Image 1 (cartoon, rainbow, N blue to C red):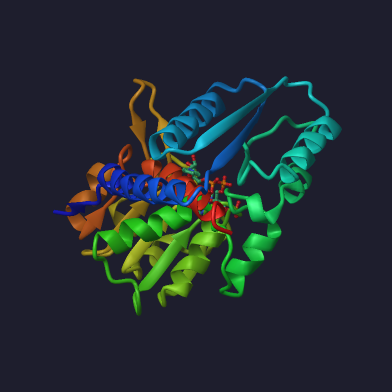
Image 2: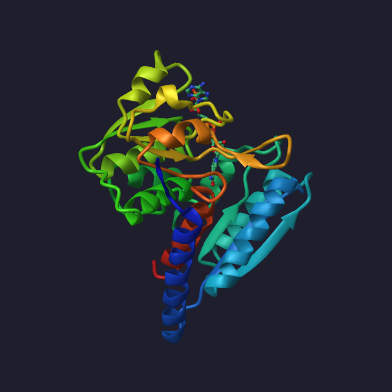
Length: 279
Ligand code: NDP
């Protein structure tokens, strides 16, 4: 029976550590502020934005909200980002994704100053991760590393399979596991025999966006299973990309959904915000 990796508890620990750090920085006269931009009124985005602002309040940094109409032009959004880039009172800028289809997402991400890019999506920060230099790291994969480390799960020398190669989860996740000296295999929708690949993993990290896709047949007895996926079931409950009930009896450790990777994303965003205060 697997040990449950408690993301709620670990994320709370991290937020409490950050709260102490922020208090100490304040004593030195260093204040932090995060600008949160939302374009449109997508309900899921509104929940994420609200939670991010609450987390800022909890750790003691200011958040500034920019709620823009759905029909805001790309030029208007770029002008706002430019203003925030030059505002010394703002350390971090995030633009909640997805943005409306009439805007070029890559252009918007590139417009945010890499020094204030607390989401870690700017190509300069992604590049820094590739070559092992310091920079902001995408929050969800950074959170997975913290879950593993704070659960005393050995990473070095382990076979790690990352399923999914998105820019915000799969790719940075693979790079971080490589940095931690795992032997990393990246799988995706064109992988031949995904089951056989996954079966070799000591640590399997799943970010594919398909509810309960990974069943016991994909998981080696005693593997560590990290489930990044989040889906809402018809009855309103949540599930992940992993079939938790099937996999749990065979795994050594597993993240639940909810309460696994989810809460870590905001904790690591706060970590990046605090780092941005001293850059
Ligand atoms: P994307 O849709 O951007 O990427 C999905 C990846 O999974 C792609 O690389 C795709 O391959 C791969 N994939 C899809 N189907 C299969 C398959 N059948 N077999 C193997 N690989 C497959 O998703 P994200 O990375 O943004 O998100 C993944 C999941 O994580 C979602 O459920 C999302 O909601 C969740 N998420 C959770 C977060 C959290 O805070 N907990 C944060 C971010 C995401 P290909 O490239 O070949 O198309």
